[in-house]
Length: 279
Image 1 (cartoon, rainbow, N blue to C red):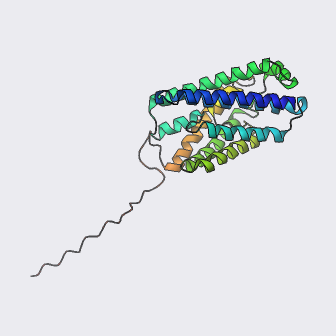
Image 2 (image 1 turned 90 degrees about the vertical axis):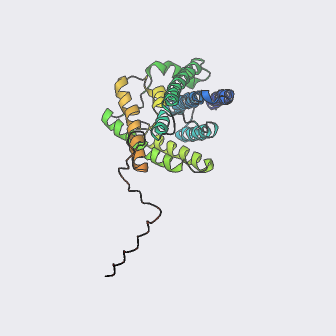
Image 3 (image 1 turned 135 degrees about the horizontal axis):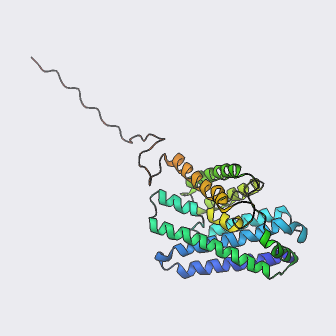
C-alpha cells in the first residue's frame, strides 16, 4: 500500500498544480491557451504514473489490473471536471478550427501549449521516479531510459487501430457536446477507459497526439516518423472522417454538403393556376 499511497500523493500534487495554473490565468481570456497547457500536463504526468503501476506495480507493489483501470477512469473523470472548456487534445482543438469555431492563431497557440504541457509532464514524472520513494519507483527509474513502447503492432495495423478508435470517439464526442456535463463527462471517461483497456495489446488507443508524444515517442522500437503516422496522422484522419460523417462536410475546407441533402423547413406555396383567357 505504500506504493499506492505515494502514487495518490503524486496525483494530488499534479491536480493542485493544474488547478492553480487555471485559476491564475482564468481572468485573462487572451491566455486561454495556458489552460490547455495545464490540461495536457495533468494528463501526461498522471497517465505516466498509471503506466508505471501497469508495468511494475503488480509484482513490485501488489497492485493488480483492476486498480489501474479504476485509477485511469478516475483520472479521466477528474480531468473532465477540472478542465471544463479545455481538452488537452490537439485533435479536438483542430476540430474546432475546422468547424470555424476557433481562429488560426488561437488554435496554433493551443496546440503548442498542449505539446509543451505534455513535455513538462514527462519531465515531472521522471523527476518523481528519480526520488525512488518506493521499490516500484526505484525499478521504474532504472527502466526509464529503456521504456516499453505502447505500439505493439506494425505501423499499418497501428494506424488503422488508432484511426478507427478516433473515428468512434469523435463521433460520440460530437453527439454529446451539447449535452449536460453530468452526462457527457462520465460517458467520455468510460469510453476512453474502455478503448485504452481493449487496445492495450495494439496501440493503447491514446487518440491524443500530445498524450502519445509524452507517453511513448521517447521509447525505442520505432522512429519518430513511424510514431507520428500512428498517433498523429491517424488521430487527425479519424477526426476529419467523424466530422464529415457528422456534418456531411468540413466547413473550413468546403461548404458544400457532400453526404446529406438539407430539406427546407417551409413548403413553398404553389402559385394559382392561371385562368384561361375568355375569348
